[in-house]
Every structure is written in structure tokens, then in C-alpha cells.
Length: 267
Image (cartoon, rainbow, N blue to C red):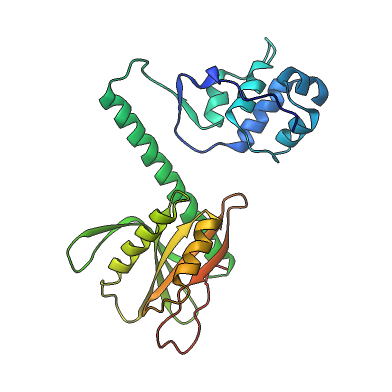
């Protein structure tokens, strides 16, 4: 891409990432920083190639911190974009304190992780709901952070559940979201789903249990592990394409003694 080596990003020193990047706002601010300069002039001021700047402004390039720093450093004195709104679009929030105790840092980190978890779950829930609606399956109810109890009376947290009405039946989809690309975490979360199967549901409602992952490697690995493991219930692993924000694939574990093969209701 013709970029210079990575440099420190002093712009981020007093900021903490608290949410996902708002690509539309970031690109808008980048164009405002560019001003009346041509892409060639803007690229020269940023220290990047013209093709790299062109890809960025057309939303075809991953926005790295050093790239954002270079764009910010290239701004003119009359630039209307403020530092806080520029970094807010990048997903960063200004720290309210400069000297932090270990307890404050730990709490700050915990909140950031919690915010990330909520955003990831919200994204997954919205994508699955949109997939159901696009297939003309009306969503009847959505519950967030629904608590279940297995036969050992341990609470199991499911990220969310979606109840939908199909032509002949109702289906409740219990969903756990794997936030990282860790195969170990994915296996652990599937164990949570297996434990949740001790719950007794009304016979008139089919309950599906799904693990959502945004990582294709995790999806393929889990599919390879469980493709020959027949189960009595409806259990699946759903892959979400984080770029296109759609359901990319779903692997449904084979059902023991099933007369027909279960098909995805999302794809």
C-alpha cells in the first residue's frame, strides 16, 4: 500500500476504545480533513500512497490506528473536525482521569469488555432477526441475557433468545455468542448449551440452541469436531460475516433418530 512504517499514536494516549468504529462518520470526517486538496496532495500530507488514500475514502481499507493518526496530523488549521468527535467515530472515548489506581484501571477495563460484549451480542441479535424477517418468519419476542437453570441448579447465561413463528410451529432460538476467535472458548460455550438442554420446554414449541461465531476458522473447526456427533436436540453453530453483517453459514448437528435432516432457518 506504500505506507510508512508504523509509528506511535499520541492521538490515542488519553482515550480508550469503548465501542466499534462508526465507518460512515469516520469517512465523513476524513473527507472534511482532506478539504479541497486532491487525493494526491492529501496522500502526500498523510505519508501514504494515493491508492491507499483512495481505498480508505471508498471504505475498502481497514482503518489502522497509525492511519487514523496520519490523517489527523495532515489537517489544516481551519479544519472543522474536533479531536473528540474524530476519535468518537473511531470508537474511542476520552478518559475522565489521568492518574488511575489499579482498582480504577481494572474497573475501566471490565466496563470496556462489558460494552464490547453487549455490542457484539446486539449485532448478532439484529443480524439473526433480519435473517428471519427476510425469510418471512415473523419475530414474536426477543429476550436479552435470559437466565436458565440446569439440573444442578446452576445459572447459565444465554446472550439472547428469539421466538419466531414458522408456518406450522413456533421456534425459540437460544443463542450464545463467541466474542473471540478462540476455539477453546467456543467449545466451552457449547458445553453451556449442552447443559441448557436439561430444561424442559412445552412440546408445542421447538427449542433450538445455537453458538454464534464471527470467525470462519472457529466455525470450520467446530463443524469438523461435531459433524459426527448425533444429538437428540436442535443444536447449531452459526457463522456471521462481520463485513457484510449477514448470516454466512450454519452447521446443524446431526440429530439422532431424526426422520429428516434439519435445515437452517437463517440461510
